[in-house]
Image (cartoon, helix red, strand yellow):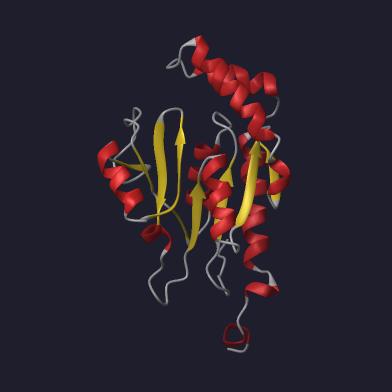
Length: 203
């Protein structure tokens, strides 16, 4: 199914608590939908198994990251569980004449900054099927101590209280349903009259 993009490029911000499945969801959307690319964030955390530098993240030192903060190189940045994450402004810039939407997979702190600086962002909050399932997922990562898991779970609950700040809320009950709903949001936003320019209507 081909989709033509007839408007200005869009910025989709996908956010939600840790362990809710944002990255998996975004990966499927990038495979499914044409004319959309992932904004690659910088982070000071080490790569997880299977991650490639420059693909999922740019893995940089804390010194380099702090230098970028000083240089105002980030559209947003946040400290999450003692690691730094940030979206470089240059990731959000587009070459003229190229109509590719941008997908931003970021945490709740970062999303809040983006909402302030980029009013045009389309914001989507991902909820877990239930708190119980989220707790199990966080425990299942196997990389954190139980103390760390509790800290993450508490933070996730706090973050879920912010869902009403977002334009869309998707509960990730099953991957298929969540992909379908996220795809529907992207398709609907792409055909909004407000995003169209006369030159593209009368052609």
